[in-house]
Length: 263
Image (tube, rainbow, N blue to C red; front, top):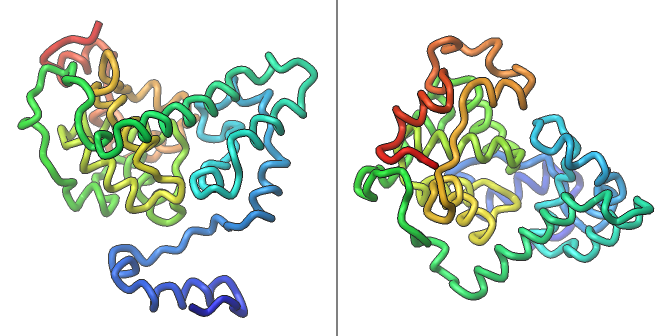
């Protein structure tokens, strides 16, 4: 295969010709750059002390190192040691390192169960049987035309950049599984088709955590939660504001979504 190109767009066009099936599925090329040099530049800019307080906000201090970890360009040890080098007291980056440990845990579990990540690890705690969940995602969801500003923006970002903030992934997964009652497997496969950092371990087991097949209760959210951590960027202009699927208290939504009420 050709290895030198005059520009990144030229590389992108070449890849489309070499992988026509993938290009036909989605022609977008992520703006995220690969390679060790760029990975090390990103690593040098991380702010692990600010991670704990801001990580749930879409504009928070997350590292965006996951694609480089996924493809082995950086190691968890490198990232951990860089975090420690930026503080005097290692306890200042406890939450940050804990999240690295979760990634390690997913991989170790995957090495043990293999394709078992595609099977429910536990029974669902929603009260709905597996047959209640549709096995494929509908076109309005995969094309970003649900009419919900947040969900459609997440779909667009996922398809055009190959990345989503972790909180956005959780909201999207909860919408798919609980609000639309679609199979977590279909959602997990959709993510793996687009995420640059997608791997069956972290991806599938996180979807199962949301679905409650690998957790003690389902994860879901309401508009107040989404508006808080997005600082209202979607809700302000959403055509469904005031009557969207996410309106109401957690108690009200739980009554609507589940047959068994989470503890």
